Length: 374
Image 1 (cartoon, rainbow, N blue to C red):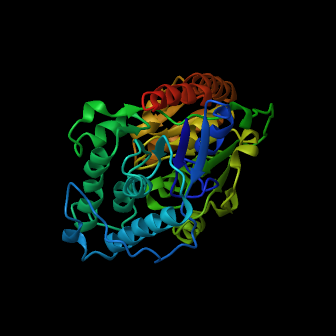
Image 2: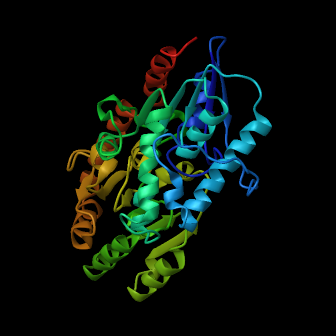
């Protein structure tokens, strides 16, 4: 069976897709399966000239928005790149971004398409202050979900909470499949260690949606209470300078290390103690599963896919979003009690290995793919 995994970002791009898709090829390497990956290189800009066609809405209603126009241009660039680079037919295409799925179906209309929606671009833009709720851009982006349902043989998402979110925008919400991201356990090697001062780590894009302002306020509260810690922030983004200034203003800059973007944080994550990320929204939150497989104690906000991964007090701690006091209190629990911290970390490791193994995801995908075998 000839399979194509259609990505938008290159495989090394940080995020949920890169945590699973590049590792699928080894698991599908056999005489029965022939899998390739395809994505749009960053250098491809303003090449496409093709008029986009949508079956379920008129995109011209939104063309006054520069953000929508940029999205459309990227979509037709992707079509241009497909026509230039792909010639041979495939038995099945599995797309992991709306642009990738819509473009593939335009070029290969007779090939079955499975579409995984990993996250909500419109929610991220709203939380990051880029667009307004119910504005042109928001309405355009949520219209794409119905279009994806129309052109796909199957819609997949990565958590129950995100499937519930999508249900408002599709005709047959009950047909959405849920397959969480899977993680290759060989990539994660928990390391016995003992840090005299608890080491906190967070890994994310530095944007308002991730709630790092809340984390910094919580850490300032910890310092006021007399707790020692070091906070390691791995990632980059438009909010970095603002967050660094905030750390200085709060008097915690000496306790906070900004690393910038790092390609494989899982390689040194096991040497930390506590993973914390108070996101304002999260479709799945792959980095929580990665931290769990590294045997770290987890502290996260009670939203979206995070709340599906963490059972509060069992394999991590959940706090309300935006509540820096509650976050500080949760961190205090795991900082002040190493044994409790270890118990949470061990439970998180067990849970992640059972629920989010790559083997389990691969088996589910294989069963789904075989339904469309020619």
